[in-house]
Image 1 (cartoon, rainbow over the protein chains, first blue to last red):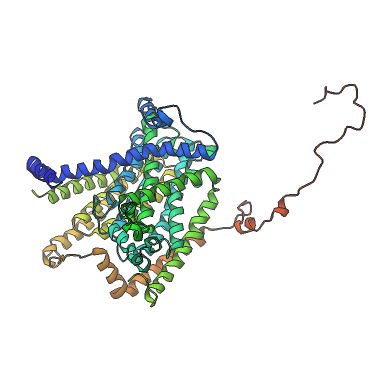
Image 2: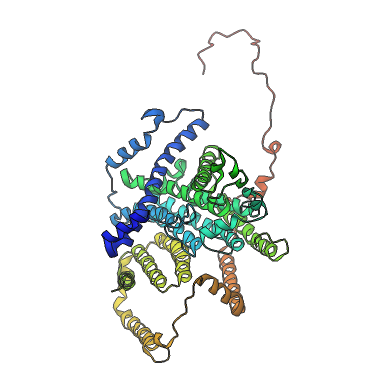
Amino acid sequence: MNEIIQTGQAFFGPLWPVVWTLVKIVGILAPLLGGVAYLTLAERKVLAWMHIRVGPNRVGPLGLLQPLADGVKLIFKEIIIPARADKKLFFLGPILAMAPALAAWAIVPFYKGWVLANVDAGVLLALAITSFGVYGVIIAGWASNSKYPFLGAMRAAAQMVSYEVSMGLALIVVLMVSNSLNLTEIVEGQMKGIFASHGVDFLSWNWLPLLPMFLVYLISGVAETNRAPFDVVEGESEIVAGHMIEYSGMSFALFFLAEYANMMLVSAMTAIFFLGGWSSPLSALADLPVIGPVFWNGFHWLALKMAAFLFFFLWIRATFPRYRYDQIMRLGWKVFVPLCLVWIPVIGVWMMSPLNIWK
Amino acid sequence: MEFKTLLFYVFSVVMLFAGLRVITARNPVHAVLYLVLAFFNASGIWFLLQAEFLAIALLVVYVGAVMVLFLFVVMMLDINIETLRKGFWSYLPFGAAIGLLMVVEMALVLVGRYFSLAALPEPEVVAGYSNTKELGRALFTDYVYPFELASVILLVGIIAAVLLTNRKRKDSKAMNPSDQLVVKRNDRLRIVKMESFQEPVAEPSADEGKGA
């Protein structure tokens, strides 16, 4: 590793930091986009199995090449621009949906030190970047100059802004107990505690003492990514596909990729804030002879936790009916926000009492 | 030239351009989007000044929430651009006077002897210094009363806005979720036991099979 850095510095000179950052960005984005592609396949397979169907199984062995076939198809499809659409904004929409979904990965720590930008105010930056995603939807809906996309955009604006509030309030509790806004420090804070010192780390993670906030954050995350059962923004049976109706080919595919990248982002964030990121659930087993190394802290645990949350996303899509719009608003404003506002002083009092477990 | 200086010029040029387009764009939606761009670049400049909390707060509050709702409202408006442009020349002197006043005031602050940036001490940046923590400490210790007062005023504003706009409509079909939740099965559904097959009693008539 050091050799690569040294030869790079010698070769590129002052441009080296830019080149090195680009290399790191590719290192994060390439596996991410691969994950996104196979998440679409996983979604179709899991939904199929839950419906007792087979799912895609024609392209390649077990249908494993299906995402490639889909990608090729979408790239070669014609992009149709509605005659009365605002052309520039029409193309800006998908880009603005995709960019924040990818940019937010810069601050995700995959392992100790494995992070592109170790920002001090990481939690705030995560909130800021994820809140830009709504612009893609709104601009796309408006620029299409069509009724259903516009309705979709209106719904998206109200829904995503509402659920950001409860997400932010839930995170306030997390940063209170970890006394830091840095994502790496939040993960490391969860590796300490009474249970962690006895080797049962998973009881020391934030999800247990902050259980209500964990649920609020997870459900708000589903609503924030506009996934079922909160997918009234797309609402196939009411407004066809919301903001995506007028899009075709790659411009449509960008919205799709953004949605899945956002799902993965929410899963990663939930794992980092509440399930101890890359920390092993049972570090007591790390000394076992053969299977021990599996229980060391490592990126594989973060990946496993993300996979579990992603399965949760697919699971609730297959099993829950869509929420009615007024009930979505009620859940966000009248249930989650008051719950968070009560929980902040509760945790504050807990932290000031002798029973404080986050010293 | 330092890389930071280059970034400063990039942010400034884009911000000035975006600001100019906010007031010259024909379409109000475009104007709002240019305003968002201006906010972004202002936040970039704050980042360069190492005021990361303020920079991110600008992004979260203005770009992430306020401008989204602003865009929401502007999109719904049916604005006729021609009528908006009508009074342009009559308003111009007044607007120019206010603009000039602002420029003079800012020049006084920036160029004047007592307020200029040169008169301020260089901020001390120590290792492990956290902008966010310092700001939080200042807000909740030294300035706790003004801070709480400001939040109470905001709360009053919110409640007033809700009260002013929230009128009960008689034809509203909104349902009360708690009423819906307490409904029991027996209130809505009655199960009637019926034989699934009944022995035909009468003889089949002549035109059997013709009726639907």
